Image (cartoon, rainbow, N blue to C red; front, side, top):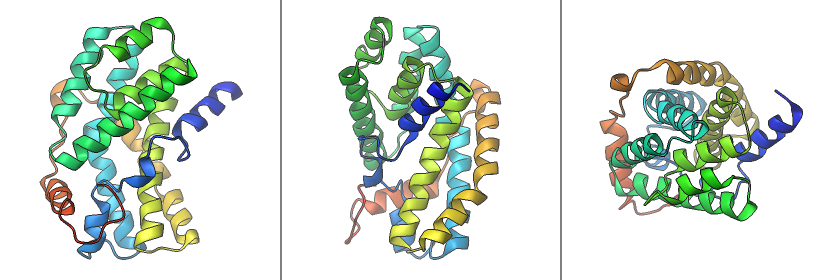
Length: 225
């Protein structure tokens, strides 16, 4: 990848991107509260399983959205955007993706990185989930699709590791060791996301959904999901 494109990807996938990702745990805080995640080994098991869920649904949708934005195919963008929002099966998960998608969409407009056709497609969405905004930003920045997908997956995993470092808690070295150990799984998830057919996509994760719903009434919370 050209150095300029690599720098754009690094900025897009950075935890310092002002979209609020650090305020969400995606169900992990509930798992820590219930004792499911309590050390480095259990954290790795949780993140590995979570990555598998993402590889079966969210990542394939991001892949489809990347291609749809590249083709300036508004109908396909609308379809997969609506599918993803409809699949958020708890109030917190839905609010999370809409809030971050809105923030990234606003950033795209404020930075003026997208051409008029991309802006029009994004503006036509009644609600913008994070995958749609991310795919639009990646296309606007001319980031290669394979690299963009890897960046999105790494960002999700890194956020989960940061939650574990702060809340399990794990030490900083343990967190970095955990992150390094997941690189191969991120690559595998990316390849799987590119290969799945439409009728193979699945977000079936009832345990995670229950944890998310329980988090809504959890007595002590740091994160919004």
